[in-house]
Image (cartoon, rainbow, N blue to C red; front, side, top):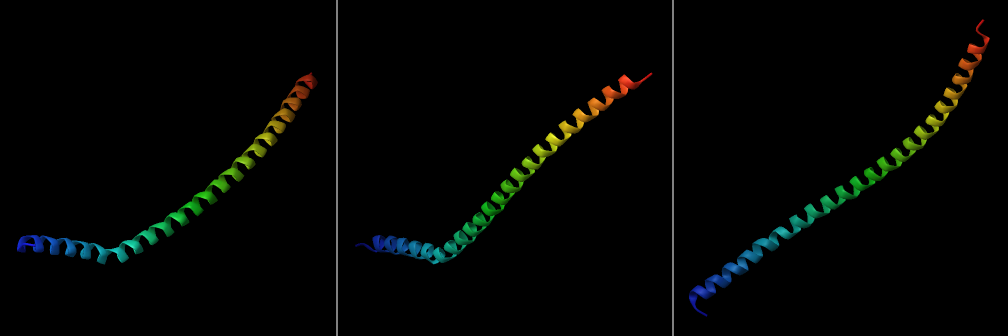
Amino acid sequence: MSFSERHEHIEKIEAVSDWTDDVPLLDSVNKDENSYNIEQNSVNNEIKSVNKEQNSLNSELNSVNKGLNSINNKDSSINKDETP
């Protein structure tokens, strides 16, 4: 192996060594990101649950409003009939 080949080989080894030195840091960053993503998914699921409950309550409110409108329409009709 010539001097330049050995030098090139050493540079490759050093490059790999530099990269592997960063692996624990990268693992830590990945773990932090995974933890954040898990928490974000949990928050998103909670929001979905709240939205479903809100939709259910809105549906009930719409039903109540329809009933009140029906009563108001009947009252209005009765009042018209009683007008002299």
